[in-house]
Length: 113
Image 1 (cartoon, rainbow, N blue to C red):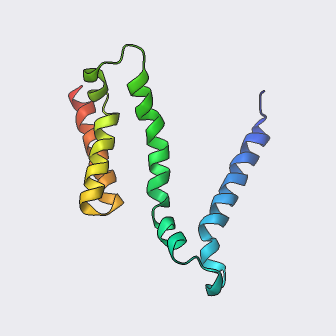
Image 2 (cartoon, rainbow, N blue to C red):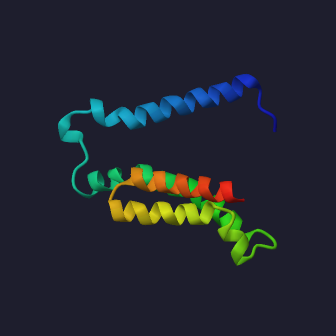
């Protein structure tokens, strides 16, 4: 199935509108409709969960690739970068330093290869 340019741009515009509305919904709804308790705490972790959902398939690809060995996985840079991001995020109790550490490890291993 081939999509026309108008269909592709329509899909992109629709996604932009949906993301904008869902991300900003809590700014315009009345205070009594705001999430509380467990839902509010869970929403704090949504950006990090989205990042994990994007990175995990890439890491799994490195692990299950034909001919993958222990050394090839570690020099692939994706798994060590993800582990560094996880470790630093847990130690710093913040996602930003973890992401910075993951990118630094990714660049370092790619520069050595």
